[in-house]
Image (cartoon, rainbow, N blue to C red; front, side, top):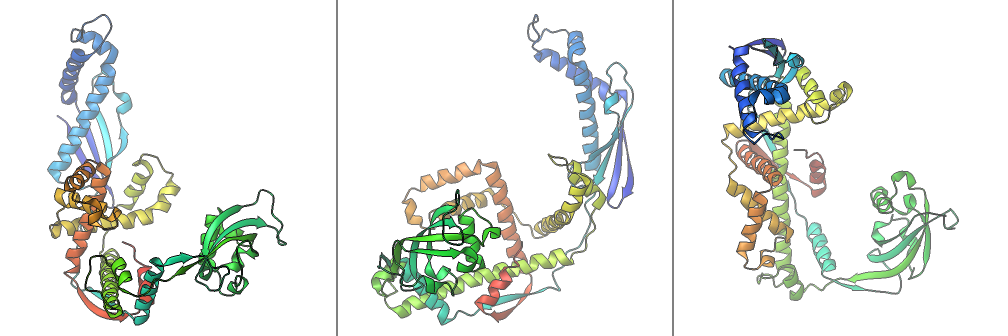
Length: 454
C-alpha cells in the first residue's frame, strides 16, 4: 500500500515523499496494457487482436512508466485533499526514482516533492479611513470644454498666413546639418502640428509664415519635452536625437473657425436633448458632466487607497525560498537564479494581493455569473460604437450573437471574469470603509491619479 510522509523543510515549505509498492501500480499496468492492445495499430494484426505479449515488448516500458507516474499523482492529490493542504502552484519534484523504472524489475519506488503552503492571515478594514476628493469645477474648466467643442464642431479654413497659436500646420520634416543642407539618407516625414504645440519662445518664428516657407529648427529647441518626445517618436527617433536639425517645410496652413454658440451647435453636441436652448443651459449640462466624471474618478481613487492600505498593512508570510525556486522551474521557460531573484519582489506583491482579494471575495460572497460576462461583452460592443446604441439599429439578435461568440472565447471569459470580480469586490469594500470628503483642484487631483496602481 502506498505511503506518504510529510516533513517541514522551511517556512511554509514542506516535503512530501510518496512510496509505491508493486501492489500499488502492477494491476493498473496490466489493465493499461490490455487497453493498449485493443487499440494498437500494428501491421500484420487486426485491430484489437494484437497479442498482449507483443504490445508489452514494443510499448510496455512507456506504458509502465506512465502508469507509475499516474499512480504517484493520484496518491498525492488524494493525500492533499484529505489533509486539506492549500498550496501554491504545483508541487516541485525533488529526488525520485523515475530513472529507475523498469517493468522487468518490479520494486518499491520513491518520489519526493516540495510544496509551498499558503499562509493564514487576517484582513481588517475597520481602522481605515479613506479620503474622497471632491474636485471643484471652475468656470474656466467649463470655458475650456466649450472652446474644445466649438473647435471640434467648427469649420476648417485655409488662411494665407500663420496668425495665431490655433493655426494647424501640415509640414514635412527633412533632416539637415546645422546650415540646413539635407543629410544623405536622413529622416524625412510628413506631419501635422498645432502652432501652440511648439515651445512658446519658438512660436514667433512661425508668425506670418505661409505655404512653401521653410523653417530650420532643432527638435529640442522648437518643442518642450513632452511634445519633443512625441515628434521624435513619430520620426522614428529617440530623445538622444533631440539635437538633430530639420528643415520644416510648411505644405498647408489651416485654422479651425469655431462654431457659433447657437442651437445648431447644441443639437450637434447633444442630439436628442431638447432642453439645451441657451448658453446657460449648455454650461449647466457641461458642468454636470464634468462633476460626474470627477465623481467617478474620485471613487476609483478611493478604491486605489483601499488597495494600497490592504497591500501595505495586511501582515503575511510567504514561502520565499519555494516561490523563488518555482519562478525558476515552474514556468514554461526556465529562469536563472538571478532572474528569479530580480523578479521576486514584484511577483510577491502581486501574489499577496491575489491572496487578499481571493479571501475578501469569499468573505463578501462575490459571485460572477455568466450573465455578468455576457452583459460585459455587450457593453464592450457599445463602447466600440462610441456608446451610441442607435448605431446598432434594432438588431438585438446581432448584439446577442456577438455576446454568444465572445462567451466561446476562453481568454475573453477569463479576463472579463477577473475584471468584473474586481469591480464587484471594490464596490463592496468601498461601502464598508469610512471616507471623508476633501475639496481639491483639478490639477492637484490629476497628480493624485498619477499614483493609481491597482
